Structure formats: C-alpha cells, structure tokens
Length: 323
Image (tube, rainbow, N blue to C red):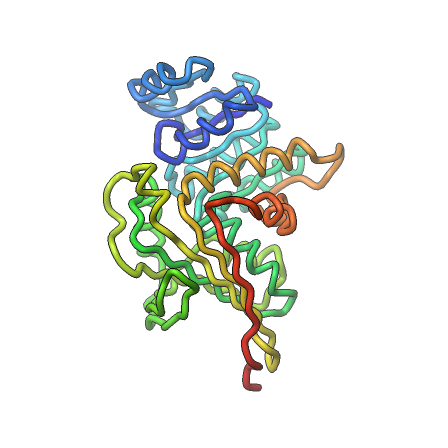
C-alpha cells in the first residue's frame, strides 16, 4: 500500500516511517522542508511532501494527489484541524489513522469524518498509540462487557517525551476536571502511587463504541520527568504500565495489567497492525469511524504483541465488590 505519514519528521512520525517503509511505499509529510530533506537523505526510498501553510483541506488534497491509500496522522494537531484533515481524507477515499490520545480530537474526528468515511467506504480511526488508545481499550475489552464500569490507569517512571507528545499532554491536563488523586496499586516494577483523572481518548471510545456503563482514565508519574526529547536507548529502558479494572454492580472486580517499554516503538507497531487490518478487510465491510479495538480486535492485538520483548502481561481477579 501507499502510506502518507503526517508529522513524519517528529519522533513518533520517524518511528512510524522507519517501520512502514519496510513493506509499504511511504510519503513523508511535514510543514518544514529542512527536516523533510534530512529525512529523505536518511531514507532515499521515502517520498516527501511539504505542507507549509497548507490548510487541512488543502493538505488532504495534496496528499490525495499522491494516490495514497492510508494517511497516518502523527502530528499534535488540535481537534478542529485534525477533524478537518480527517474529513478531507475520507471524502477523497483515503483511510485515516490518528495516533492521538486526546478524547477531544477523537470526538471531533468522529463528528466530522464518520459520514464521509461511510460514504466512501474507508476507515477513520483515532487512538492508535499505546497510551490513551488501543492498548487501554484492548485491556478493557478483556475484562469488561456491556454495562460494566471501567477504570484505566496509566503509570510511567518519567520517560522522556517528544515535543508533540508534550503538547498533547498539556492539552489533556488542561481539559481535565478538578479531582482528588486516587491511590492505585500498580504491578511490578512499579509501586503504589497517586493517579489523577485525565480525559484520554480510550475512555470516550469505550463509552461510545463498547457499551460500557462508564469509563474513567487516570495517569501517574512515579519518578523522573516528562521533559526532553526521547532518546531511543533511554526510551527502551524506562517502563510504563496500564491497569484495567472492570466490574458491574455487586460483582467481583476483574483486573488485567500490562507493563512495557519503548512506547514510541509500540506506536509504530500498532499503526502497522492497523494498516494490515485495513488491507485484510473484505470488500463491502463496515466503514466510517471505528474504534481501534474494533478495527484491530483485542484477540488480534494480544496475539500480535504476545511475544513482544517490550511488554509483559498480568491477570488477576480481586474479591467481590460490596453491593
């Protein structure tokens, strides 16, 4: 397939380009020409497209003119811009995958791009990254059914983040409602910590597409900081974790957890899996906006990542919840 990566010169975008170019034709898209030229020097088989001063609709037109099949959106676009880009791609018959963890972005993309996606028979999906997206919804799907209450908690020991990730994290924190931190028992190698409620995309996706009664997401940092540009070696050393808990009223609480390293590598792997699922879609299959855990079934995600050295899985069931 022919894949356009928007935000290709950022840290996440470079990781996605590096992996996808092994099996697809890649068009690297960014606003600045200099970084694009440096990327082209490193990977001569990658085509480049400068989107300097292009509007979202103009960018969609420029990308579609390259006859791409899928757009992978890795730039930290605000919700209105991401939604317009997604709508423009879908209206032109181009699949759209976004790695965002922001609920506001996922909701806006759904509102603007679902109908044109259905009309043109293409997939639109948000939350392809491991944090605030597909791993959270996958874990929740393993323990929760319709009518369950779900709580997802993320923890990290302060892995360094890219500039785009920091922009998105700041918007997520500013969008959250005031709340009291909650103590969470994280799996090894973490320890109990205090987690704040944050509006990640996976909570919105679970409520909107999986029929859970309620979904909440929290995040904690147990040490270090979120400053500085990620270095791959450091990114691979520093762990993160996700804990999913689910229960219906008066029933026991089911829990599943995952710990891992290298979240940017995982993002690239999950994007590649999403594209593989698009390729495998039968003709006439459902189209439009799709949660990543529907595009990529939880069983397929687990199977794809089961042998990954970057992840470790835990499963436990707690005592009954008081009625």
